[in-house]
Length: 89
Ligand SMILES: [Zn+2]
Image (cartoon, rainbow, N blue to C red):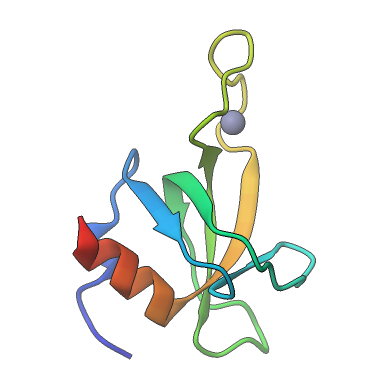
């Protein structure tokens, strides 16, 4: 695992997650790209080496007109995909 990627991901960072690089909180691998705004990057979930938990908002999340939740998306992301997305900015 490459070091240093986590420090580049601060709250408010906008990330483009590639198809196949992320999964829903239920573990469903997704085959579409996703654009999210990072709230917090968590730890490796138990039993899923190489993945991390990411909480945030969708970039088009505009409820009320600001989303009332601290975060409304919880995803699992491959560390490799996260590294690539982080270094692209
Ligand atoms: Zn939201």
